[in-house]
Length: 238
Ligand SMILES: *Cc1c(COP(=O)(O)O)cnc(C)c1O
Image 1: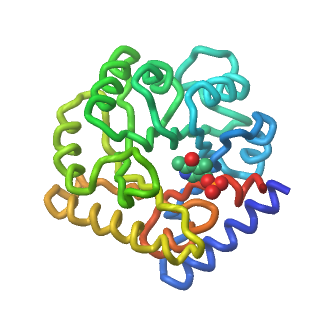
Image 2: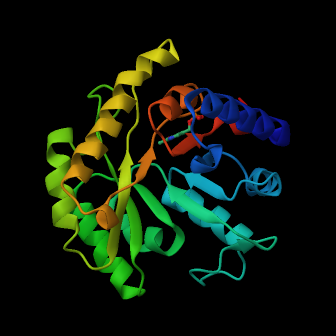
């Protein structure tokens, strides 16, 4: 079933991309596996998805070490010969940062300078440059976390001073809506926002990742420029 779901998702992505003239290869599908088992993650990987998203550090930790034995070796995240990338998509508390930097390739939910400071500190201790996205609160109803849009550019500049963090892009969570189309303004806001930020940066310093869109609205998000979509139910069912 997971395999069929993934085929369907790929098909939808191809259709949207051909309609708007984008290359489907630009779109990274993250299988958000919160509340799912390591066995289900194995199935996802076997079906060809190598990007795994989790919401909570402890839960990710358990599955990470179930899939990537022997434990305690950061960087050793091969599975069946493929490099698996772990994404933290949920809110990160500062007391979980030490563990988070050992596990995650990309932290999508950086929502304060204090958190960025902690990430930098712990990443430095393990000689890592941690890739992150800044979470932007495009809608006050969707979540209480995230930088306000007007704070984001300044936050990126501050975080650029940290040696062990690399800001790769932006993430947003759209509010719950009855029809996917209603998510469009939030996605558009994030994309325009990234464009505005990049106007003031050299091309080689541009931020490029736009993490937006979930099971109900990923097609709209792709139309608005998403290059990472975070899919739970569309892949695992339910
Ligand atoms: C759960 C979750 C997802 C996936 O949600 P679905 O609607 O099941 O696709 C994506 N992003 C975040 C931040 C989540 O918490």
